[in-house]
Length: 142
Length: 142
DNA sequence: TTTTATGCAAAGTCTTTGCACTCAC
DNA sequence: GTGAGTGCAAAGACTTTGCATAAAA
Image (cartoon, rainbow over all chains, first blue to last red; front, side, top):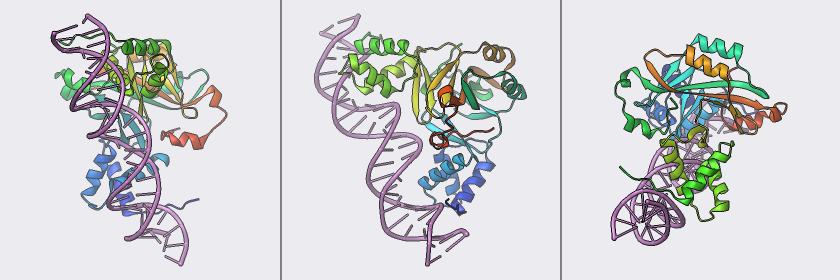
């Protein structure tokens, strides 16, 4: 088996991921880590993020056509603001308990449950920026 | 405001979407509709799927790096098999009731809740095909 | 020294867009 | 006839990969 090496790039990427709650894209991680490590390449960022996801150190979240990464791998969920497109963490024991106690699917073995709330955050609540909302291509059922 | 026209392409795409529960990608829709309408282009498929999502006739589901479409816009959820990568519909009144009655987020106005269960379906349950699972880049918390 | 990880550039995949043409209304 | 929708080819956005080089162990 391949022995993994510690590199400055890897360390700085994980350091940044652990320090933020912003659910950055690979691009954003690269921009941030570049401040300290100007020579780091975008492909190195991608390669490391992928490895960390495989090693279960990060969570990968697909929003639209790009992936966001989250260093918090505990059971929690996400709220996505359709106006400003920010991703917020949602920690809720009721949901955790409900899913642990009540949810099972016939003929399907659940490994992981991912819940995403689409809507508008506090700051955008009153904006009702429909034009902007449409851009993300998520529509409402209500 | 733009007046929308009915075209054979549009009709056939919607017909197919309403006839399937397979949550096809744009590519798959194109392949299927091409059987009846050999000249239809992939961009026409994309354009129509996008319009239908905007018009709330279809749901768009992001899995990994590609979008899947679902003509069932009622409140339901999805189970994604990490082995065979099939998407299954999940209808569950318990979940519906729970979310309607118990779930709200501080400072966030929920428009839509999307729940995805990752795991293994009946057919793949005993396979435990880890190598394959890793490819999709979703990892387990349990 | 050995072999993994990096940086760069090129290639891949999925999706969108510009433009001339077609066809629904 | 008018202009929305189409097909095609090109371009875009995001991500991966091949290869020579750098640097962990």
